[in-house]
Length: 226
Image (tube, rainbow, N blue to C red; front, side, top):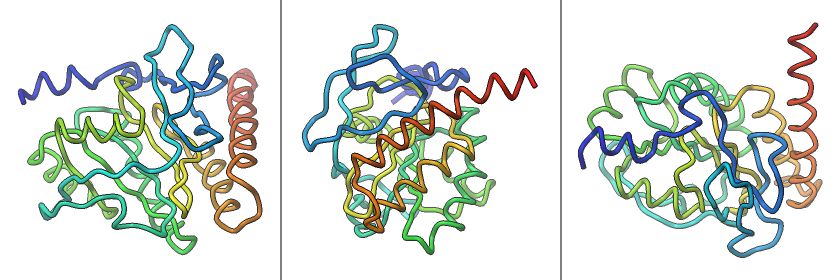
């Protein structure tokens, strides 16, 4: 696949610094949306400004090559709470996220979390950039097959980066479209940790994430004004 064509296929609003959304029946309150509350394909998005998507309720199974060239599926990390981050080397917000993802991978490992980066890009570019940035968390790499992996999550043509959060049972709790910041990550991961520990259900976690993210979004203009 031509490098320019690949970029043209997947670059979108998020890489321009504007978050895209996967929605479930209403307008967005933030750039993160909880997954469908019940198993199944989810509910079609209704916001006309963004593409229709159906977010998977559980982690889909697909195989991509890792840094060593070995084919792996997400089942390789079964029993871990996964943070699956789709990115590309040419996407500036994706590159800015990497230090945060590195910290999450280190600091949350003891809680059973694992960051998996899925690079929708050319293998040589990804390997060179991963070495340059000293990316420590696992990477899966692909071109069309990585785009197909994004589609398996129910996310199509929304731009990069985007991140899927799943609990230890492989249930998708939330999907964040656009660059992730530390406050958003902490909120989502704390709720997923509560699900893992049995302190709340996935549905309760999704509601808490939705409420918390709306509060964070509302606080941003107030912080800027102050």
